[in-house]
Image (cartoon, rainbow, N blue to C red; front, side):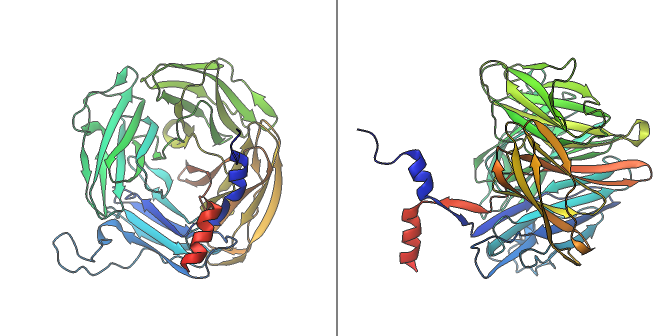
Length: 474
């Protein structure tokens, strides 16, 4: 007999309800004495969200279950870096100099659905100089970072932040062009409760390799993980984790003035992967000359230079299987500028915008919003929030044609003061992928950072039975 309910029926029975609690982890921003870091918190307005709640961003070491420090004595909590504002309005805070802490953020009730915190750092000179940015991440147990390096010019750290009351035990594996690099030091790294550990990759191995894939797997507990990839001469940025391994990947939002784009890929399965490489441009999908395909050997990091692949137009890279589908992770290292005025940023493969994606810390002139619809035409609604210091929200709707990438003319709040957030909602059509570039040129160096726009996890599917139970519990 056929089953009483089909998967489609079950999906209909599950309602999308706003999440009630969110945790975000922000890595320690910089080791430079001449760094300035800003934090921006934003919760989008979400239909059906709770009417009250609270949110806070605390230094990781200060967030312990009993309010005591590592010495056991009662700790006086430091002033929070920012106090989140009501949904729809960004809140900002700043720190300066070295030794800024990692932060653990928790949001409940009306503050939780889609809560986004952006960490943006300006480094005036030295290793990693330029603009660095990262979205504070949710805790997880498995992360892949293609695009890291132990080259002589690079100083790369993987930051591990533990939000919980128990220690986390983490393995960090490095994979180079010939396979896994030998290292016993990366096994069983303990991250204490409410603490953050930056692990310098060059201390895990003696091998100097230009392109590495870092695999962070958690044996017990959970962590937030991000890689800080810094270069002596060409700036640097945060490398966020690639989307879950998949046969097809989208890497959106390559700046149109990119002078060099390097693709780094790794297959997490036991088979080699053969990938078709395509560029979604404003006019449609094209094949980069000389880079039609990419062969990725199992267990080995593969990298290829695509040069100035966008040639002055908006672009996104689309990887699809040439033959059988094999799980792959990938990222792009993007360079702007030339000679001594180069700056770099990273675009990991990302998940679709989905129901809604959120980008905090935008400025009227420095923000570029790039959207791509790789498989089918889609309509999206883009909303600019009120400004952190004043201004009125405004929305616009865009159609992204199948196979194209558009740098859309995103709205800016009227009467803007301060920074603002952008939310992107899929209205109809196929999946949309997005990225936000934030640019700030200083002393001739084209500083920039790119954050992808996956779904902000503002809602969760709740089966009908659970909904009924929650009514009874009240």
